[in-house]
Length: 236
Ligand SMILES: [Fe+2]
Image 1: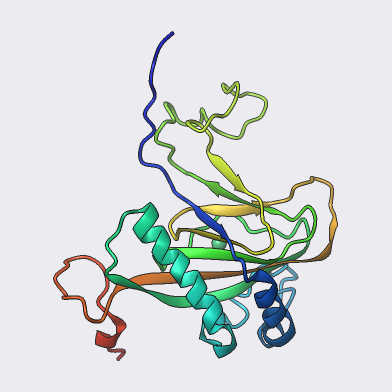
Image 2 (image 1 turned 45 degrees about the vertical axis):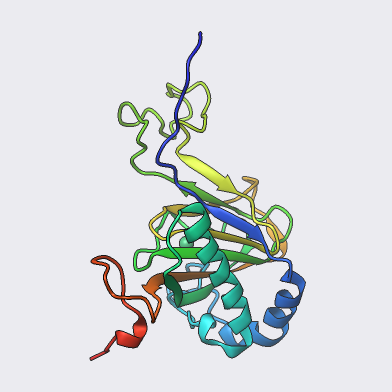
């Protein structure tokens, strides 16, 4: 049977291996990490995977990490111009950055989005064997011909196999020095590689962050969408 399929409107997740990883790992682990420690458990005894809500989610303001965040911002610009085809008229404005860590494989993040910003990233600083994987998911799959047909019911399923055109999940395996960039609105979570409870040999440690795109300072403000440059912002 002869036919063509045209795949349209994808979610595009960008990844790059950072060559200077060893150097940045050394700086972060030896000099910076200690200043961003946070409670392992909250008052209810639940494990705090991320420091976003209980630590200091402002690592991007730390001068010792300035060049690291510039490097990430350059990749974010590349994602926007090369992958998405945007004009080079914007700057990357980092607004939040935090630690994500697990010591056991049952310490995971549930499905969430980063609701306040445009683009988010994760950088894998330390990745022990069998580290939990990052999974992107979609709520309303455009190809889902009726509700639930691509669902997770492993027994009563209509699915023979999941293809690129039907999978509601796409998995990214963490690697040390890997930077992953994605639209902040993309839903994601983490899951263990093995189902058996397991302690990692060392911490699964990542830096995550959020940014917004703002117009360059010298760009004419002729666009009806998006942010002006922060030089024009006033906080009252
Ligand atoms: Fe996240």
